[in-house]
Image 1 (cartoon, rainbow, N blue to C red):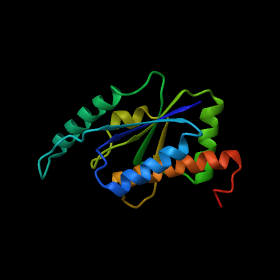
Image 2: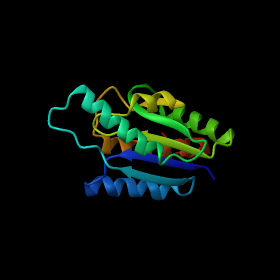
Image 3: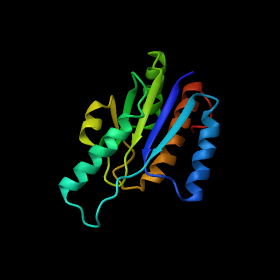
Length: 160
């Protein structure tokens, strides 16, 4: 069974996000092993300089790299990523499964995104939308879309 890792910068504080994530984690347990890792977001001053932001992103990237399993396939959620339909995501998931991928890792950055080096290492850069969402909501949306992808691949009527 494939293991899907979700590494997120920032902790879910709102109960409604926690409950939604828990629901999709429960649903996904029939299809994969899901591991969610939350890492703290680096503290920055109120009006940080670009250099301060880059330094914080580099420290977050180091923490993320410390949690990556060996030979992981990385998917970075980022604004410059490619938007994909649910069917396209299902196709990517099918490809990873057929290639005997052991560890698929989705990365969600904090309020300043992800380090450029991490994005460069990603097998796929994925954008959820050209709109801006809280990164906590992006976590719920991603879990739902991964669940939907598994349901599409099994031929379920969940995806209408």
